[in-house]
Structures are given as C-alpha cells and as structure tokens.
Length: 137
Image 1 (cartoon, one colour):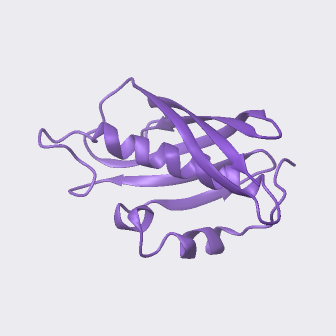
Image 2: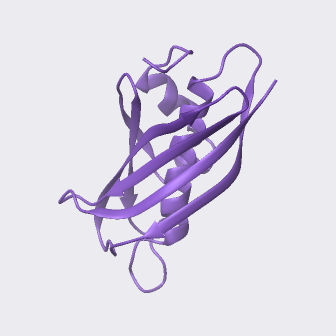
Image 3: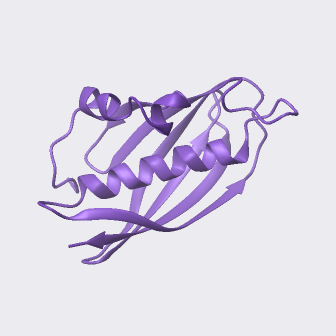
C-alpha cells in the first residue's frame, strides 16, 4: 500500500463539498492499495458550448485525483501542491459519466508524478493526463 494517511470514500467526498470538486459533481468511488478513482458527470456544468465534455473539466478531475492521491501519500504537516499538469484528450464524450483512475508513476521525497486516465461509460479512454506535485515540508 502506498498511502500514508488513512482515508475513506465518505471522508474524501465530504472534503469535496463547498469547493470546485463538489461544484462539478466529482465523486470519489474507489481506493485500492495503489489507485484512487472518481467519477465526473458530463452535464451542463462540465460541457463546453458544443455539447462535449470540456477539456478543462477533464483536467479538474485529473488534478483532483492526483492532488488527493499526493496528500494521501504525505504525512504529518506536509502539504502537496501541483507543479504541472498535462492532458491529452483522446475521445469526445457527449453524455453520461466519466471515470478517472489515478496511479503513481514516481513517489520521491520532494516530488510525485501521477498518471490519471479517464474513461467513458463504455470503458474507452477519453483522456490521459499526468500531474507532477511537490511535497512542501
């Protein structure tokens, strides 16, 4: 298990209330020994004017998953901040719910790199993203 902090899905979803995470409807759905997952609805909050999932909404899901994962891999008074996020939008999504799956690529003393893949309801990858975070002591 890579997590240093204990967390439940209920705790993560309560933390999301009253900020962008809750506003766009992100819901944490799974924590395994080395991954964390969340869903995002494709609706009027997350679509762009042409009816597709907005690329920025995909990045919000990616950054949310990577930042929370980074926090769960820190301890004590350590904080985690994003340094760089990259997203490749591979397939348009018009409706339904997308699912993000986050896993660590690198867990260093001062830096982390997270891979976040986003899938449509048919299991097709719609976005592949990478987030680099810094651990602040």
